[in-house]
Length: 415
Image (cartoon, rainbow, N blue to C red; front, top):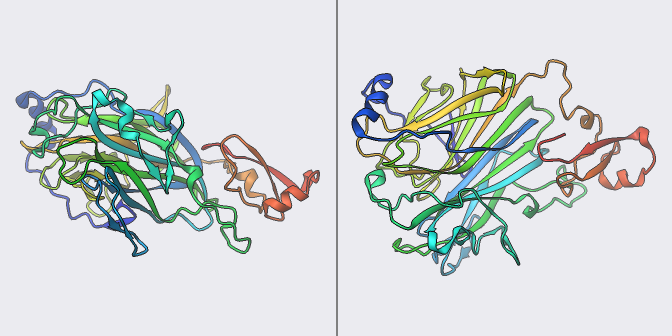
């Protein structure tokens, strides 16, 4: 098992076994504490991909960093900007010859409902690019009404914070990456994604008593690699707080079918986690090292203060099949065995599993016959021709030689 945050990995040292029997304890917990279970899945389906590839996630916590400078990955001192928290998200693990299919930036900010949901998207930048237009922020607010903030340092036993609300945002940042323009490079014409990427969010600073408060940001990348098996990658997102009034988070993940085996990968993007407060994360499969399907206290601010995006590789996954919507798995978080527990705010859950490809006709099969590359400047539903000579320039020069060309459709998650 590995847990990934900002491109780093650590062993499962946080795993502890709860003394109470889980099946009985879970029922007794809600009967005795007066806690309320959620009425429906807290996050909603956003997008899925059937692709010979995978995904990676990197993130950084930003709480209290407003106006505070830092030393970047190049060793340079970056001066602080009043009212802005700036740090780097580091991405690693994307294969050198992979095509980037999608890139989404998620972040959370605590603000006031009187300031409006866009208040947490004001002044946001990614790689130096403002995520706004003349009409305002371009990010989508995933929970326009906000959710209860984890305002008190006392975890979920603290007060609700009155008018303060936690807002969750998502925006497409695929077009903001540099493109390798060196013709002799093996990544010529492709996005450069491995490495550091600075993100800036509104944050009032270290005092922590005024809004806005930036919790953190995570970058999700989906990539295509023709050497990999056919996978389904599913993204669910939204805004949801697990606190005293909603003491459970349970999410059913759909959007895939014909799971090939019982291995998978899952990521939770969560704000406000604390090391000194605990919860139990229940997974749809077992962790290879511990052979357990749960973790105790996985959300500790590992990516930085108040931010986590742990990624777990699983096996022996339990998949439920339905004639109505295909396959599904379930993941959940509760606080069985703990009287004081974390207040947590979810932004997204990402899931990947291999799917059957019995006839060998991967969606990329036609494209793989072409030795050319899917050019990074191809966006969304644009059509591009790819020549067997292998470069975009030669594709253009071959014009009408249909026998020497193949059609690639650059669509999000669709080839």
